[in-house]
Length: 133
Image (cartoon, rainbow, N blue to C red; front, top):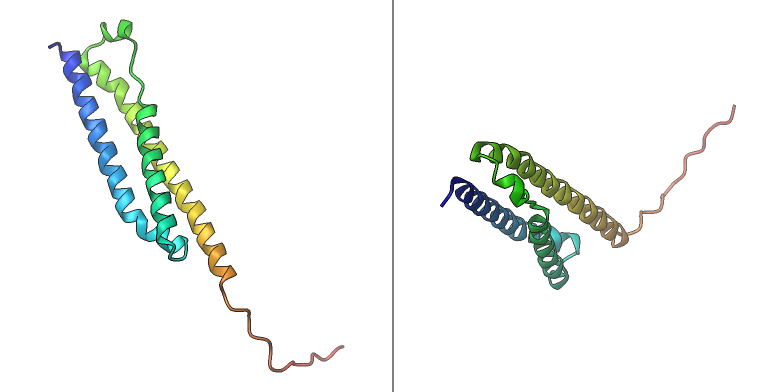
């Protein structure tokens, strides 16, 4: 096999393993946060958690772009890795921004739900008169 094929295969292996690892980590550790955000509704939290897992893996696989075969034949492995590195970094930044956006939305949902279930404030027991000048 040519060196460029080995480069393709190694990049594919690295990107798939990184995607699966990040997705599993977010899926396992995010469940607790989602259950808390949905005030103990575990069925809803598990459903949202699974949807986020699928969306993450699909968006990651859709974001990987390969160079055309005409340009690939003229690239060396070193040049190819130099072109792939910014794409990989861009994918990581998009993962991080999507994760932050999801956390922001769910934390606002949690705060709103906690405020709706909160007890009303205690009425004052006495008033203090302020002297008017």
